[in-house]
Image 1 (cartoon, helix red, strand yellow):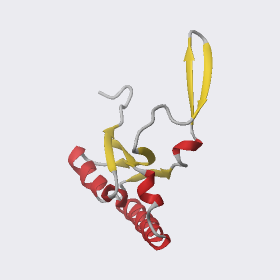
Image 2: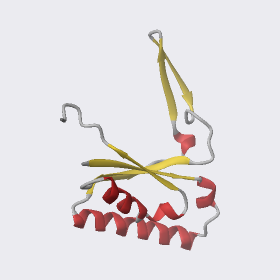
Image 3: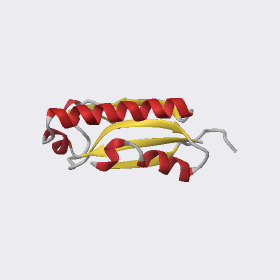
Length: 118
């Protein structure tokens, strides 16, 4: 099964880190991604730009509106994602627990809905 691991964290925590701490976090994250590739669990992983770079699009009654910024103001924001292959939810949770940013924020693990799957 496929699972989306959404990486949520408070950007202020990263802003408060020293450059050395940020470099270590980046290195640990890239190494974990490589481990997931080597184990066959990785499908794709991407980091996202900060929420201030987002735009929110809505279509209501055929009219489109675009606003700057994220949909909701929250302390934690979606910072990236890892799409993985795992045998079951327990394995997906174990994989998510190894994501280095889990120590600073939260990882939401959600199964992918396979259309047409029985």
